[in-house]
Image 1 (cartoon, helix red, strand yellow):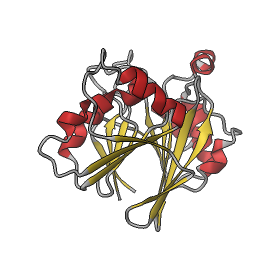
Image 2 (image 1 turned 120 degrees about the vertical axis):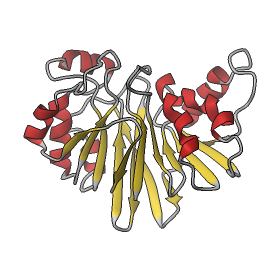
Image 3 (image 1 turned 180 degrees about the horizontal axis):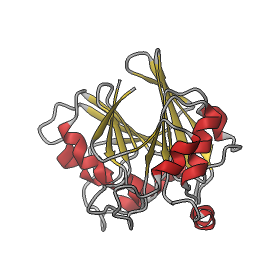
Image 4 (image 1 turned 135 degrees about the horizontal axis):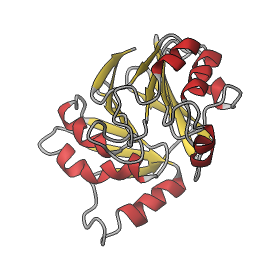
Amino acid sequence: MKLVLLGTGGYHPSDHRQTACLLLPEVGVVLDAGTALYRARGWLETSRLEIFLTHAHLDHVIGLTYLFDVLHEKAVDEVRVFGEVEKLDAIRTRLLHPLLFPATPPCRLLPIQPEHELPGGGRLTHFPLAHPGGVLGFRLDWPGHSLAYVTDTTADADAPYVQQVRDVDLLVHECNFVDGQEELARLTGHSCTTPVAQVARAANAGRLVLVHFNPLSSADDPIGLDAARRVFPDTDLGLDQQVIEF
């Protein structure tokens, strides 16, 4: 199965990365709707698009306002956006307020359910993560394929969410800060390099891909990849528009 990392940056876009958005084009599933959502237009393969939101911070939802262009002349019949009720209410009344965005994007905002059936015999489940305002992590399972997406949380190998991502083939996990910035990571609800690798090892993940990097860094390696690989060798940096088979 194919995963496209449309956007791998955090907080705001930079010259190198757009903000959080992952796409599984073969099944029409999007995880988060950051600034990179505009890129989905070139990848759409299905007549239905389902967008699952981890939370309502702008770097994860602003792309909903791009849907008119994303869907222009595309054979997509329906777009459904799933999230927690209070987060959807905030999007509806704030982001989509007529004074900020005068038109309603062509989508339905729907409460996320404990489990969602996905095309191809898959299912999506979610679990809570610690972050200001609250965040959901996602696990997607198909026969022979599994993926977990963890963003906007402070990594800890003893955290409850580790059990939720156990034995996944691919773990996509945020890594906003380098080692040594643990206090800032805790303050902002984000992660440093080594603890993320420790999570992957504790969860027995098949592969770890790091995303949601600090946009103030323009380095090719913004988080110190070698430190992660010393703990969990099968670790890679995510790149915008990278295609991953899992």
